[in-house]
Length: 261
Image (cartoon, rainbow, N blue to C red; front, side, top):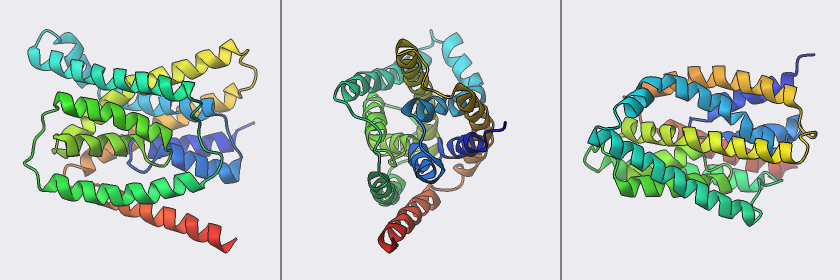
């Protein structure tokens, strides 16, 4: 039988993973009405979206790997590695401290609203800086920390947190900040999924609906490919303000529904 819930969740993940509106937050909101899924499901289907962005950036990735002896490429790889390692270390600490996805929507709703206003402020400050496409070591460090902040507070948005962290830390050029945020997300999410899968198999692997997960993974990959292609064209001439407004309206709407109950 077709698992329509898995398809819907895959579409939501594919659309929201790289838009600064929080994929995890939207998945938790959807699962509130469609039925909850495991942390493994929510994390691993993000790899579908990551596969899409890996394909989109394959030329850039190939250039970095093949041309690693070039000082500029080697430095960029180093900055990606720094951001990734900071995320791994802080993520390991968070895991040991027992940090997990929230079971209620309240933290997600507030993260959506606060993050929306923060994005508007970040765009305002970035617009007043000189256009700088360079990614500094400071940007790499800040982006690594931003990934963990987004992971601990669902609704923040990993892509949003890293893009705007990069812009405020010095990479004020929107496409350049977006590229770095997307590229550093590739090893981060693959590593997170590998860890979750390892944990599952270590425990026997009998508690996961692997068919539903595979369905959502494929749907997420296709949807994310279309979404990212559109986004990369959109940000060449537009700010992220529309997404910030969407976050605020969505959060306010959810708060309104909660109050009316």
